[in-house]
Image 1 (cartoon, rainbow over the protein chains, first blue to last red):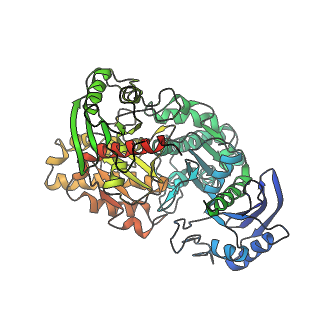
Image 2: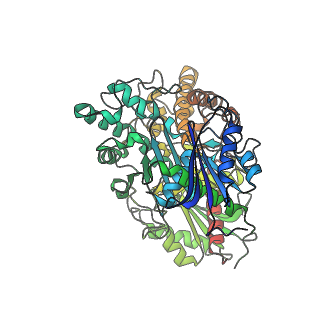
Image 3: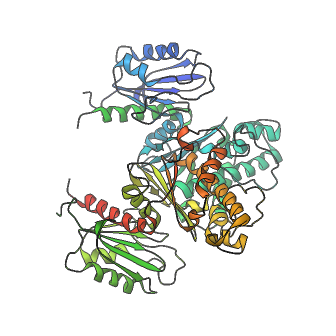
Length: 303
Length: 303
């Protein structure tokens, strides 16, 4: 068996518009990388992924961090598949099977958000922690919990963008989640910010920017209150374009303490290192796929 | 070392009014049991616990499932202590230290709710599952997640009674949580039911009972929606007196499916075995403390 420490891993961040593939061992040690458009035919897209990994030095294992929903239950007949996506052609698409068959190496598999969480845990803003949450706030809102070093999943996987959040003072926006209306994603994802103010978050300034930061911090703080009370993470790492609103983090930290209201709160929750910006940017997902590959190789090792 | 399989364990469910102590190996195999009032002096109460366990056949390990908040971080100077309780005399009380010193055996420690979760997992309504949530709805609302067989905790521990829940149609009750007002506990714990209807839940009948079931199911379903989206449990087990409202569970299951609204929901979420009543009643906590003792003994074993 290839020794884990010396191994080269393959990483696939499978997204709805592109598959980002890396070959390497860490974000600082990338031998090759490519970007493959997500076509309408999964078999053709996966064939290109296989071609990328079939070069001179094939990987010891491959990790896939995929858009979802996905089936993660080991032993389930649909394990390794994307399940009920509306994306044409990809419903019930098997990602793990074709790559395992073509490459003959262990394949790790999890959601894109769980992958990014693992990447931040290994090389980014959650290094050294065993229990933390990674949240991405962009077109949608996703979050994954790493518990004891492993992404948590059971029946399905986390969909934390869809938790309920109380309406913030003065905000009359209805919310744009097609399922829940005013859930966290419905109120605080990129489209909600843009729809409220008539322009995207990155173009806001003046009073609009100040108001957007207050509401955004308020909704995210409500989401974090629920996450603190549900998962008790050691840290929450927040990435995604909407997390880049200038001045967001200090207000968010203050509002989280307000929402906890002195119950179950610890001095650590008020510290600057409890809610932090992501450290790896767009590389978090592919980096996490490297971790998924390494975990798959370890799991396949005898003993 | 005592062999785990043959061992007799000590169990302490440390509550605000009484300490329930057992000696045995399972709920069906109890050698001795007692109930010790929770006095104003922790040292005196713990001395009685020690006396109970110092009989002819001392336990191989003791588990404590305690009222909280408690410090669970291994290596933290306050590990094994109750922390900021308002209960006179018990603030910063060390539970683990005195028992370990007096009995000289490994001591397991977790919250009372996590203990009950472990008990339900081993002998009750969550047998065979590795990722599930146990919730108790009584004077307060508490819930603990078992992830991969272990209670999840990080910075602090779960306080799921205090998550936000959207107000249910027609309910004008303000909520009675002194910290958050209308959080899950504020709207759905025993006192909220009693205050709305002028009598406790177990005495309700007719239209009041029907209305209480609808609201109670609505709030609990909102809480479970958040739990499903946050933790993706394989099952949710609900205990406590308020969960005994006649007819609650079928309405709760229907409302959970409504609240998920087709997003991230699986056929399993609608099944009768996804949200289930607890199986062990009041014995869940002491039974879980037996599991904590066994885990502590295993953790202390060489290799």
